[in-house]
Length: 303
Image 1 (cartoon, rainbow, N blue to C red):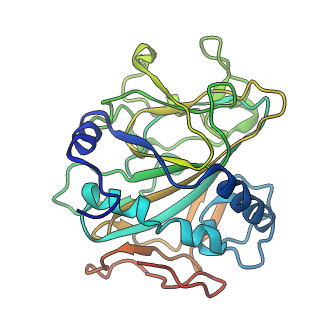
Image 2 (image 1 turned 45 degrees about the horizontal axis):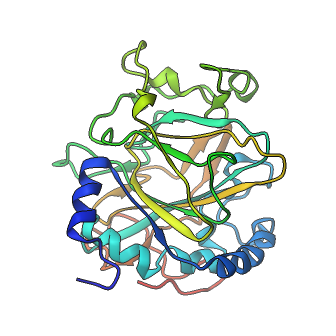
């Protein structure tokens, strides 16, 4: 067992509930200093993988490919040791995303992700053909405090083994329309999409009575299956931004962006010319993904 491996009890709980943690990663003073270093680099796209401006919803995608502090973060042993007990010895990081929630922002609607085809209907990850169910492991790190007041994550435990949505339907990107929705007295959306359009059963409604709020101090992280039903609360504070950084992992046997040279989300089509997966544990014996060994500034990834 490695230093930060999940215990037998933690692994059993993860398999039952679909999530584990929160776990400590950075001390509060440490994450404050790290965030101070990261924040100005988020606005510098001179080496970013995607040719976007900072107004795009996707501007926070895959910044581990050009920001050294995030390149180091995705391979931290506190994270990877625990992932090996879930995904096996050969693991790749295929995506990362910044999730800011500013004062007054609405919550995120309940959703699941299996192939991440929800925005365009095209699969972004494909597990081997002998695997019935896929998804990815998300490691969500709190760069600031995440509380119920400023919009922490919520999970419905045990919902990770059944998909209630059909991602192949795709969704229309309509931020002006969706952001006006007010469901059950709580303003929610899905970054300009209405996730209910993917429901297999139009009358389906997640059982919020079983939901748990995942509050975290700055510097902690939570591990969960992307197929777990999850959402976030609105930020009802006046001056407390909530910022999370999600890094996503799959076994190296999974194909990432198979047979495509670009992907479409949030009204933008993004070229994958500068994209590559990062091996964070073991190696990539399948050889079907483009692997990058250093980021776009020349920083070497640890593995």
